[in-house]
Image (cartoon, rainbow, N blue to C red):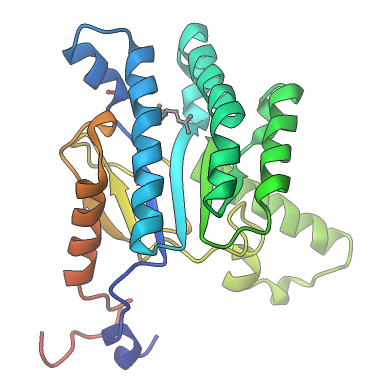
Length: 246
Ligand code: FPP
């Protein structure tokens, strides 16, 4: 990446990725069950999608269910998958009308077949939409993503489709669940925690990190605007030297 190119960073990021954290604490502060926090979190998802569309961000990735979330109690796992099913049944048509292309990334094989079918139908219905590509990370882990890509590349070498010297960063990127999607320019985490929690580990190599002190259910269009403002003010160098004006 040349310094000149780094200086000409577009002010709107191509891809915003968000770790939606704090649903449980939001509910706890109100003396409500955790499910109430997740429900309010699903409302915030709607506000976030609207904000991304309004601001012209072409790719948005939301961490909705991590591979580690399977180890939460069975009640919470069933609440979260129930909420996902509700969301698919009641919101996909609206997202389709809004021009949103839905894509699900993660180890979807861990979900029951009926839910997997609903995920496939939602992807098929919205496939040609261009206004916003919304990736929902479900049963997702960054290490798991890298491992499945390694396995597929190894298989292709074993089957004689590839030689080891043909393996490079671009080829590897195209074997990740996010194949075809630009790397996130900004990685956001809400709730005042400062961790990546196994989210898009390979893809976020050069992402600007933004940590917001707000629980996810309270996230709104104003917070989205703050993220874009912070991004617009950061100089991205991709490892190059600082520009003369810096
Ligand atoms: C983290 O909060 C959030 C999650 C584990 C799941 C995110 C889910 C949603 C926003 C709602 C469902 C989304 C869709 C698309 C239907 P936490 O429970 O870890 O909060 P805590 O750290 O305060 O306990």
